[in-house]
Image (cartoon, rainbow, N blue to C red):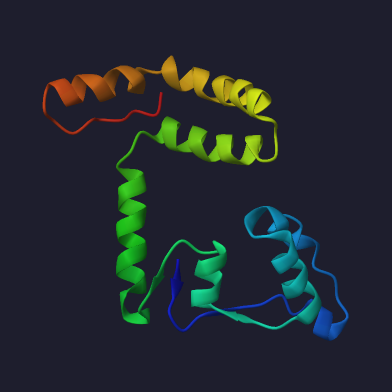
Length: 136
């Protein structure tokens, strides 16, 4: 998430430094664009970062804290084991062939399916109440 006035840049090329911290950039955005950012050291706007998929949302600066808090609350309201597994799955399966990615994803989600929370979610739905996640 970014405020509409934000700018993003990788400026190390302007000062002769390295940017090994950006090693995953080619996974986040098109590799050609990553190379351009690394080699030109020219900042991009929040809108351009959004277009590239580097940020998910661009909001007016005055709404940034509220919007970020709403996003955090939406995530926090969900089953923590499922949220954690979703993040792990995306990171662990990037670039894998489909069959291998599916096998890795199954392994990541197995503990989720066996958790108490996996029973709580459907039970809460049936009882028409918010779930009480335990993270176990």
